[in-house]
Length: 498
Image (cartoon, rainbow, N blue to C red; front, side, top):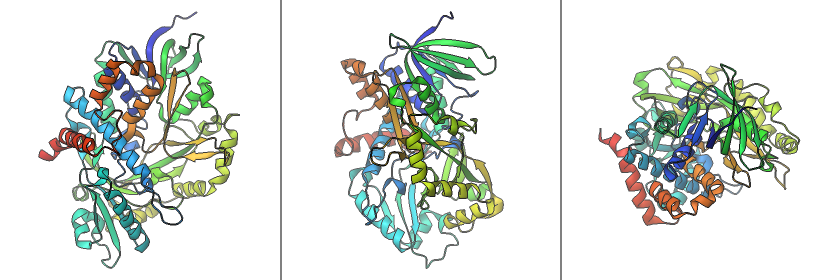
């Protein structure tokens, strides 16, 4: 019988979630032995890669899908408040790591980028004004600005206003202290810092073949190296499945009762990428619009200034599409293979309830480059077809889960699934994803390391890592102000000063 290698923590996937969880645990308990495995030949090359996510520090400032309106026009801002507070948690942890030298200079992974919402037409301008009034009254959004003045908007977003009919009714909101985050660079820095520790190991080109819980509660995990085909058995005390679209399949393999009933709905995407440096240098913000009716959150259109691997880029999209793959390098059979006796009913129910979404995704996938440029011109009227090319974006697997009322429910958020004994956890879902990684991984720690977290040492350390830990930033005005002053000074002001 093959001898198993023992580790305290096994992390499957090398994206932002696994890297964040490992970094938190390494700070809380430096003696924990960890192994991170990744099926690809490099770190953060799937969902976390800069080309495969929005790169927006999702804070609810500009994403209109986080403030939906009901049939009567009443706007709900609760999700925007929650996401904003969660992003502040990420900023606090990153600030701590920068200050301690565990992360490089902030400009390597985060840069100041104003966040704007832009709409046109009477109904949407009215909606944006109402949204502004509701959010502006909250201390989290007290810096939000609104304008429906053409000349003011021409200063805020020149590309968007150039060549636009001045009789068109338009409006925008703006937060100056928004951010652009290169989550790929951030993750590689986090993993690079972890790799300097003697009790952390990274194995690339390595795939999980099986998971089995032993009678003592630990996990026997069989790994296969995809190039050499050699196998290795790992005896892990705790397993985290942070494998993006692959997490659902691995969760199902684990056999834990909590996995039953979960299914996945994969969505693909594409960006239009600008080739013209002169155009790129005239746009310095993230401009989000309203999603088309029936569109998933990941396809909210935005004209987006990005810093990718240290170089400026201008993207528009993403254009969503239908796929059956759960990963970029996955199989077209991923969706079919994910259907199990425990989730077939909710998946069928969701399929019947969301035929409009399926039709929308298929129609998006069939759009020509010319028709995609036409959509771009709603945001940038003078866009030239020759200045833009298409790039594939990442895959996102939206959550399907059981629902007592409808039989099945399609979720567009991020969800933690953990076994009752806390020995295994998985992250499922998409938006807001990477931006709330720290809050999500703190939730994993609270659910799976509850005993350790009760100790005074862990409590004190957690407060050092995240000053607001245990306190609601939605309710505490003074704490929010002091924390935001620190994080902006640490992460964004150094770039502004250059």
